[in-house]
Amino acid sequence: MRAINMKKILLALLFSLHPLVAYTQSGVMQAPGCPPGLAPGQPGCGGKVSNNAQRSAYRGPIWQDRYGAIATDPETGSYGWVSDASSRKIAKKAAIDDCGGGGCQVQLEGRNNCLAMAWGNGVRSFASEPSLREAEVAVMEKCHRNGSGDTCTLDYSACSLPVRIQ
Image 1: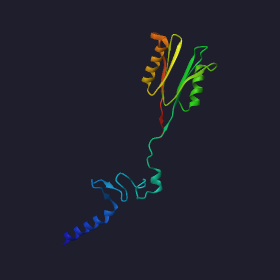
Image 2 (image 1 turned 135 degrees about the vertical axis):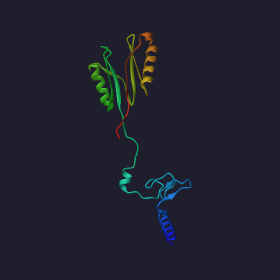
Image 3 (image 1 turned 60 degrees about the horizontal axis):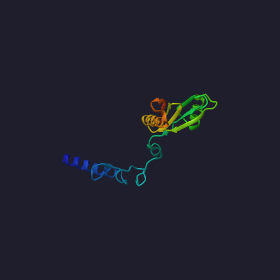
């Protein structure tokens, strides 16, 4: 008699919990009122979520851009550069300051990429590419095309890549 009562109690408990949790045909737990793969609060799901849960929902990483620049002075031959600046304006000013100011002019600037500069037979070459290796190869090819041949040397290469802030 007691075993029958225990079975009835377990069955009653199981049936009373059934509306709280639903399972898909594959056996995966699913929120009631939501199509497979959606959670309460997402568009297309009838389930309710508190405002706090909606605010704390993961929205993906947040990135901050980084800038680089190269400046040269054609009169003196001096040059300057900067990488990982927080803005385009700061990068350009820092490259000109590093060059020595005066007649320095920004020759190349970039956002979230890599810059390179080469020198050969009195001619400077510049390149901007997604990776450091690509920038270095591109600038050396440009230097050789400018007629500098075997005298080309890589003077500068660096990347200014976005920084994850959240």
